[in-house]
Structures are given as structure tokens and as C-alpha cells.
Length: 82
Image (tube, rainbow, N blue to C red; front, side, top):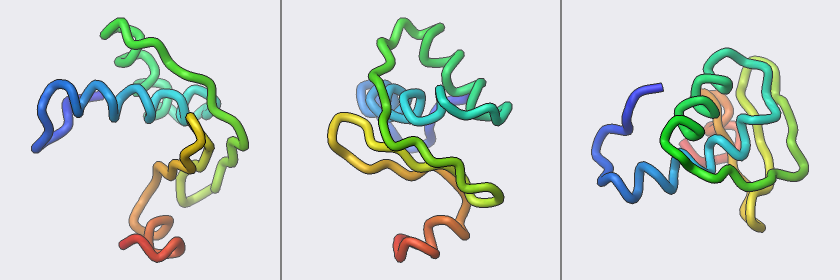
């Protein structure tokens, strides 16, 4: 997992922390890379609930009371985000 374009280090760390929380329940290779990057950076990964794998789209979960989506454009379009 590489850095996030257009973010400062603090914002990148917060984003990585939340993404890792969602992705640690996923078996996808990119998800595993996100979790490894967070752990390598010493980030404490919070627990996620209501994890849902959305095959062909991405994943969704609730972290710290927020519903988070990680996935492709089709997922975002289906949720009215993109």
C-alpha cells in the first residue's frame, strides 16, 4: 500500500487507521496490504462491526459509529456517492 495523494501525514494516518479497521476482516490481497501498512506504521487498528463483503464492489463496515465503504466506482455509484 502506497501513500495517499493530496493528504498530509496526519490525515493519511487517520485514513489508514479506518481503512485497516474495515479491511482486516477481508481476505482480499489489497486489504491485507492495507492492514500490514497500518501495523508497520504502529497504528492501533480499531474494531469494525457489521462487516460486509460486497463481491465485485468492495466492503462495508461500521467503525467507531461510522459506516465506511471501501471499493470501486460501481460501489460508490450504487450508494449515490460518485
